[in-house]
Length: 224
Length: 272
Picture 1 (cartoon, rainbow over the protein chains, first blue to last red):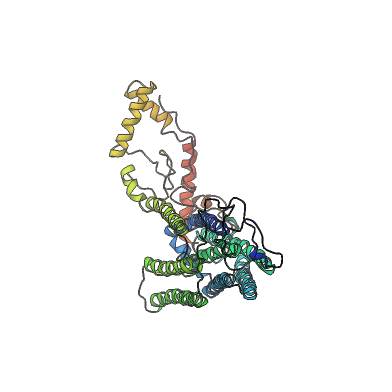
Picture 2: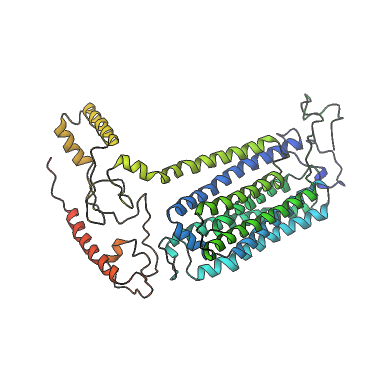
């Protein structure tokens, strides 16, 4: 019931939290924040659901184009990115664990590792996937210019591929920005046992990014 | 941290929440690491499964249906997703409302997939009740159009669905006073329902088939774009596998179409 801040200045920031006046307690605020985040994640799932549905319909209509298109992707780099994202999800969950157990240094280190893993994901995606493919003419829709194409519907495959992965990459960038923000707040000592709403909520978002990729990876890279 | 021992809490004057700081479940580091290792193992499994399927298909010559590929990959993905949700996102230890939101979202997603998939997987069956013939690529929802093979689409007037709709249409027009007898109905249908506006767009994309005509790769879309045969076909076709006798044949057809299109754009006025 810490609406009235009576803690002395010497205490770490997380021990004198500011609770919005319309909440009765910090716990209520924590639960409400998480509830709001889950509602937002539900809309995110539906957003990606549209892309997954487009994928399903076009694969149903043009299986050959999707088989060819998937053949151009490298399961190695796709799998590597999956491993990178899974590890970053783990470091995110671990930083929540360290916030809960008040291990401030490990909290900061694991948040930073999560941020760097997100960066590694983007670099692998850009350097080993987007740039080589785009320069060879494997582009979406009207930009398609790949002389080796054997199915006239391959531009549709690339539209789905770039649409899904770039929207996912946008989420990675947003997630990384949020993690960096949480990291800077953790440097000020704003997170501790029972007071880690920011880490928890950003963590939920980051896990969703991972969750989406868990489904994108086999659907895009492992078709035959 | 607990303020439960406070005699009076101005934020909770009735004591609804006094001492009710619920537990924040702490998932142990050991548990989280185990989940990560399981997730990595499942990633390896799904990649290995795809490669085994490819190996069986190409080296042993045994055809594996596409649905096996999809079911194996999606089953592993669902298990991985469930692990992430339950342990990393802590739904297992959370208040039930968060899990309920997520499940309801998945139900919505299921419905979102269900109806379009029913649509695209059953178009052939619906068409057989709706029309007398199924036209590859669809006819864009209108009748009286010129198809790529030169024929004109017609309304079949013997299917139960068509008769029902026609009867309802007839009665409705009678009620509105727009027609007064069978002959006027025929004229009304000719004018308002069977009109083609002189269009002949059967080469364009329809609800049933996308016919891409964009892109700068020479010859890539000729196979599916009849219009390309008629105009600018002399462009470089060095990389075109389809060049040869088949192309000449297609050219003849394209010219035939061009003639028919020209005719269909100036139809004889229908008697009213």
